[in-house]
Image (cartoon, rainbow, N blue to C red; front, side, top):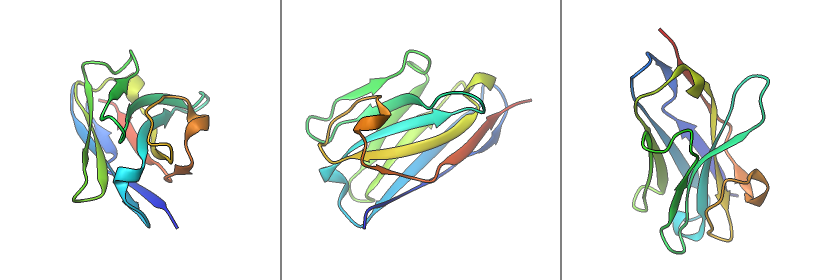
Length: 124
């Protein structure tokens, strides 16, 4: 059974950094494309970034481009989201998701497995 577990969330001041981790168990990361999503209270779930395992391509939402970086460690079966220059509007629950087709995309419906989420709060 495939499971995804996010970690690394917390409270950070504006301008600060956090590194989120997404650990996959029950399978091997190379078989999946991975996406990061976030959902703020009262808002729709938003695609933030993704990484394809078929060609290594990455994609970022305009709102995070230049500030967030997605990466992976096949040895640790994990994907990371490095978040720099954080803003209050980045506050949300962040989720990782896995796509069996190994693709990269920011549409939530393409993903087969989801983690439980980790809270990120950006506030002074």
